[in-house]
Image (cartoon, rainbow, N blue to C red; front, side):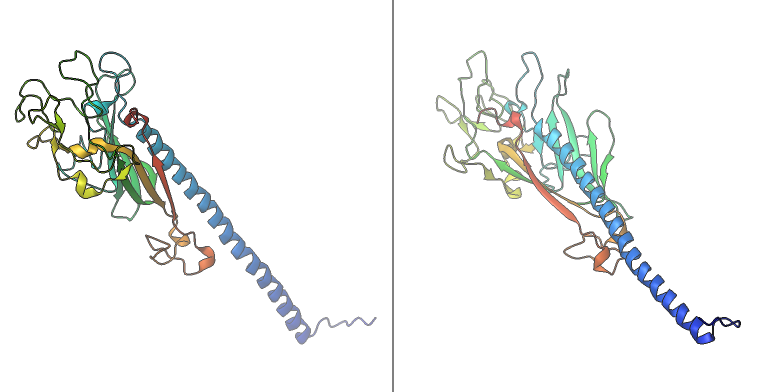
Length: 308
């Protein structure tokens, strides 16, 4: 073996440096995608968690819609008196009467140890910064508060009883329930209604008041979808002049379908706006994309289905 005292030649150093640079570039080529994959996986897990929070929250409150007082004569489902599910915001900062908003819902129920129904409202909010949030408020003084961030889609659909409300017992009976659902008419005249009628029943001289609502299907058939137009055209309860009036067809609601869409919080993980992203991001490489995720689920509130 010959050892040269003058060391490596310039060509040998250039070759060695090139080999070193190539090896280093190869290592970084493996590390950078791995970092991107790690960030994408962490964000995907966070999106799944936010989706779970939204679903659990809505299922819990929608499942309790219409719950009446837990004890006393006023116990039972609120469905025998009023519409427990409203497709708009009621209470504080209420929407105008006759409103239908696909991304807003108000749920009425009597809290434990309470005597009066309380409304809980959920809605989608997008601020100037582009961060969409699921918001919650209620009639007990709780202001708007975020439930989850980066919720970019929220839609409610309603399915109802195809049969109109019917009288179960004569109004002369001392105890109810007098109707299959909906408020019973008063035996005495109560303006603007004549004796024996109200917003859901009409007194046409028959022994039993007849429903104002039409049949949407044969008895015993499955629930039918209630389109928005049907929920804002009346008849109105408690009457058409009331400031807090609501459409009597809302009494039909038995099931609510919810669609939720969640986006990645980091713009660096979102590509251009389009089918994959409601809000576009800064990423231009598909390997670093975390597309929006969407889930659809249905809730059948137990207190709205006691008679089915």
